[in-house]
Length: 67
Image (cartoon, rainbow, N blue to C red; front, side, top):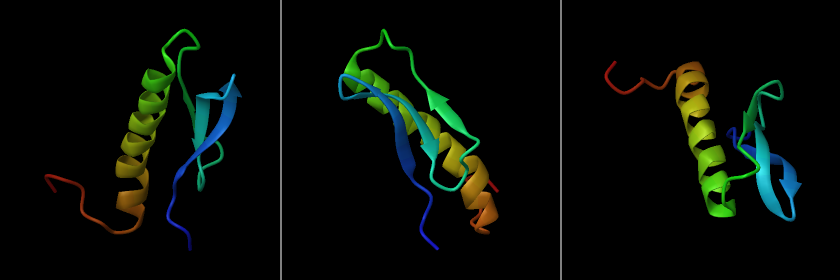
């Protein structure tokens, strides 16, 4: 099975503003359209990392930090 990853689902002028998890299509990561492009992309990555840490690491049996 493929490792979950960030999928960009909406862009404005080639800049990502929304993303989802490849394994959790009901999860949506969103950024403000007014943010700078590089900030939006980092914001989406940060939201995905937190989702992955709390959902997929636990599901895969990987211990969470501090556990």
